Amino acid sequence: MKLLSVVIPCYNSQDYMRNCIESLLPGREDVELIIVNDGSVDKTAEIADEYATKYPSMVRAIHQENGGHGEAVNAGIRNATGKFFKVVDSDDWVDVRAYLKIIKTLRDLVAENKPVDMLISNFVYEKEGAKYKKVMKYDDVLPEDAIFSWDDIKDFRKGQYLMMHSIIYLTQVLRDCNLELPKHTFYVDNLYVYKPLSHVESIYYLNVDLYRYFIGREDQSVNESVMIRRIDQQIKVNKLMIDQVKLEDIKSPKLQHYMMHQLEIVTVISSILLIRSGTKENQQKKKELMEYIKEKDSKLYHNIRFGFMGHLVNLPGRFGRRISVGAYKVSQKLVGFN
Image (tube, rainbow, N blue to C red; front, side):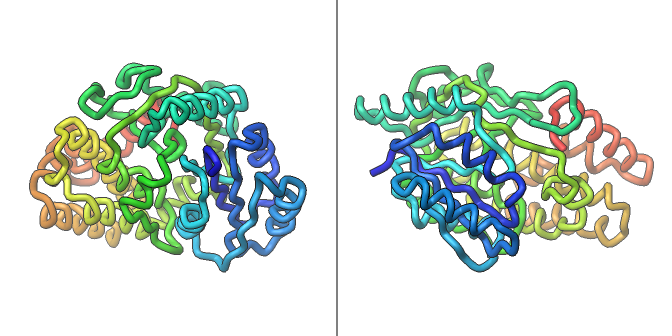
């Protein structure tokens, strides 16, 4: 069994996937790289096969019909042989020194018979043209260099949350929670992070800046104008997060509080994008989303609707919407996201 499986979802990634793959090769025999060619029509398949041929004991190429980012991750989970599992998107990369330190940590935990359900590290927003690169760190809320549980964490700040980039899961956790991401849907990384959390008991935080999250391509899924065009997919994931995890069933109060926090962030992003679109149709969708949450979970609705961020995105009238958008722009600058 390999120590770590890394899935690299690729769709028409010929221009940048080599940089991603090369950053992961120093993991050597501890790591398997699963390059999933998701129906690409450029040279992605050729590049994937090239690496699989050159590094047969480390790299595997999977070719499938286009199913979207989620189905590429699903393929990775189905085929993974590693004890731990990580997703690295093909336009991103990892810092090699941090990567090697994480591999050593995972190896030591397994050798000491102390495998954890989740390892967390930092990630960096590699925003094109930005002078200051925001680092998402967790050293103020998580114990460092020790195994801990949800009861040991502190409260996350408003703009601080776990993302796919910061998490390595025990592969069995992903299988135990029956994670199956929807096909042809963007923004499933929110569901990928969220659903397994209730199956996580032991956690380890390594305070290193591992993942380099590139933001800058005009066609990128996190580009705001692209997100507005795909708002129905964002709403779909938002609703799946609500449907697939019942917060009242979570025993740990701190985990329940954190998951409420993460849902609030995703819902606020959905709401702001609907406001930003400026259409009456999307104003109605925003209202319907809040009604959906109210019907599904009244406590969740109350927290989202009447919390600070909820108040901010539900200010009445055109002037209220302008204030909401202004506050969102300020948070973009502070947090560093696109």
